Amino acid sequence: MKLNLQKDFKNTADILWALSSEVRLKILQLVSGRKEYRLKDLEPLIRCGMSNLSQQVKILEEAGLVTKEKIKDGSTAKLIRPSYDKISIEF
Image (tube, rainbow, N blue to C red):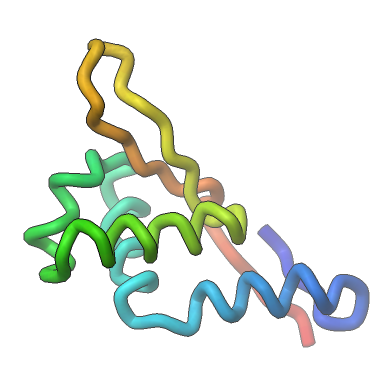
């Protein structure tokens, strides 16, 4: 993902805001290293409640930084995957 502050200010601002949280950066770091995580497996690693974790993942998802999908084994578990391998910002 390449962000350009000169061409797409609104989208870039939304993504930078999503990246402005230590918790969200830690989520991105974890899922980037493993390529996918179940949401419930992130909870002890992030050390925040499931409600807060879900909210943080939702912010990342709305910014297009991660995708969230249900596991196809019939359970209610969800997988979190990074949307990009690299993010660069041009000022």
